[in-house]
Amino acid sequence: MALDYNRIVYGIHSIAPYRISDGLPYGLLKVLGGGTMTLSSEVEELFGGSNKFAWAVEAKTISAEWTATVKSMPDFLFELFLGASVSTTAASATGTVGTIANVYGTSAVEASTGIASVAAKSGSETDLKDGVYIVKVVSATTVDVYSLTDIEFLNGNDLSYQDDDLKITASALTITASTAVEIPNTGIELTGGSGTIAMTIGDTARFEVKSAHAGISEIDLGASATTFPEHGQVCLAQKRANGDTFEIELYKVIGTGMPIPLEEQAFSIPELSMRLVYDSVNDKVATIRAKRGA
Image (cartoon, rainbow, N blue to C red):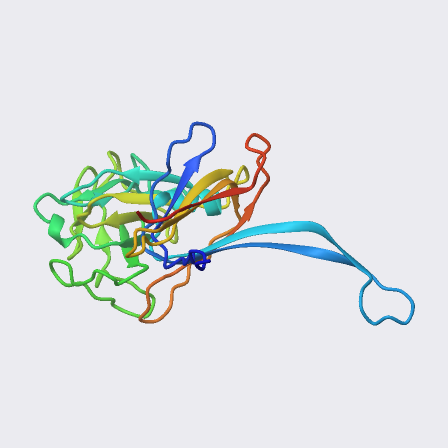
């Protein structure tokens, strides 16, 4: 009698999370480091007398887990594994300047007596530099500006810090009624309010800038109403040279967090931890579909 066929599984190809409610996919994960399904049980052992070995063993509850190493981070990953709320901004060839808002005090941003708005300076959009900017009132009519990163200081006209406080303005900028003043070498203008400018020293405001981009995702974590959506997954091993395929469908998955490592000279590769839940509709936790090549 010939030996039976040897099923050999190799590599990983993709993971496709999908909504349980309608079966539609969230997206496709293909830049993967691996995935492991583990079903493990605690056991109850019966010992008695002088026998050093158990007379009987029974399985107790079974823990069903699925871990995956992912090397890309699409928006839906944050929704499923961190309970995030994701909002997106459409692509802009010139960049995006956010709305300015007060941080400390209420006088820095004020439609009449403070800064009315912030915007990109027409014709200087190539000077826009990613960052969070802080505006500090230093007199009733003047402000200093700070940047919380220098990641794009070489965009367009170069920008540099003036001191260790991260100030980027060499001298204070004067805010004039209904008039724009440029923050040098940033491509950004601050426009004064419509009345007599009268800000309070020490008050601060902030705004955010993104240079030319193909889209922005803003991912909010930790809201009081955070939930981790139950979802299904279809996971494929790599197709072998002999045509074999190996597929695992997980019917009800709960993501239990996602680390986001930022390490020196290394790509960020999160390790996802998931629990597999019994699906009463399908009466199972998972299905393996192993196709033998023709």
